[in-house]
Every structure is written in C-alpha cells, then in structure tokens.
Length: 74
Image (cartoon, rainbow, N blue to C red; front, side, top):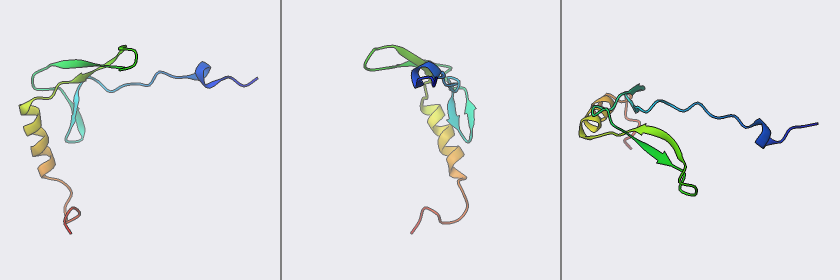
C-alpha cells in the first residue's frame, strides 16, 4: 500500500546560522543571529545570521570581483 506524503516527509537540513558571502558560509562579524518564524503559527523555524554594516562591506568587496566580461551591461 502506498504511503502518503505526510508519512514520508523529511525534515530538510538547514544551513548554519551564518551568512553566505563570496561563495561560502561565514560567521556574522557581530556573531549575532535571530530566529525566523512561521507567521501563521509563530513557531520558530531556525536561526539565521544577523548581518550588519561590516558584513555588507564584506559582501560588496566579494561581489566586486564578479564574473569577467560585460554580462550585466548592454
């Protein structure tokens, strides 16, 4: 007898409470995280990294080297 989707549901592996910058997971400079929640149930889903100004700067620097060529220019 086939099983229902609910019976075979798998809990996904979530990324660490970090920021994805420059192609890798890095700790927020502040070390801070915050919880995200399901707005319908207010259930806490997981922690995410809290990026600040230093993290934005790091991301801008990582993105400045982008792919070569004029892919974004017309």
